[in-house]
Length: 390
Image (cartoon, rainbow, N blue to C red):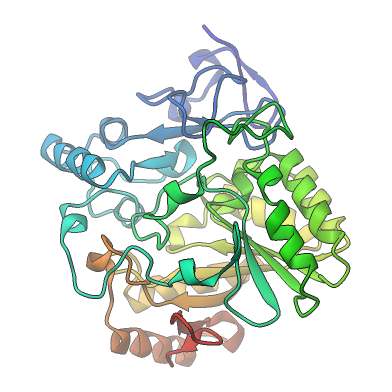
């Protein structure tokens, strides 16, 4: 039985070291040190120290794990093959999904649907026209005073409504050009996930004194190793006119074990003021583990915001959003944005009418404290800021 190192550092010698709910499924990882995010070993090594974040990869594996109907699994596999967008989900998140329930709102966010193959007018591969906003390789400049750094292309979870779902390949490191900063190479465990390829982006940031904030995105910045993330933030902190670094991430929600007290302390230690925006869409994503991860960040002095996408069949009911936002503020996370769906090709079935969104916000404002109600916004290409829809 291969020896694996668990996220907490304990040695796991296989199934006997796990609780029943943690028994290996059809998409279990290989030994620590062999895993690469996106590799057949189906693991993420986010810390750079040999720890493995187990993933379930592929509709077939997830369908088997959750005892989903064979016909639905076959359909999902066909959609994966047609789109090239494969199911990827941390086992911790998969464990929260009700077995056999295709309507579970957690599953709906990540399960391939035949509707993705429909061509819908207005739904395009690059709905935010980010190709036009590239100020440098891996740097997007859309708004005054801040710029977005595409730190890496990988995510711990593949959300079917992701507005960059069609652009992921454009960020891949060419296999013929390994990253010589770290032996991990392109996207390897403990590697830099392209940090060595950010020279042009950081030079552009350094050359524009009007910028005060760097926003880390991707992919998900927290799929970087600790070493790589530390290096990136150190390089940003060396840019004298930058004052803040903001990290957008889903990892504290879908893989909260990644957020250790040590990670939070290092993030707080930077010269820059750190802000962390968690992407969360349903109250059932607020678990004991995600609450503990949020507490580790808050206790370290890192302000937490949330961002939610309004999604049909997931959170388009008042009761669901009210519970989500109330639970977030209970745990020191301030609801920041409720986003109208970006019109990305393959996601039209998630769309909620804008008037319905406005109605939901009006009810939320009547029922919740003002600080618990996010701004309802839409991102419009070319606009100087996000458009408030209320």
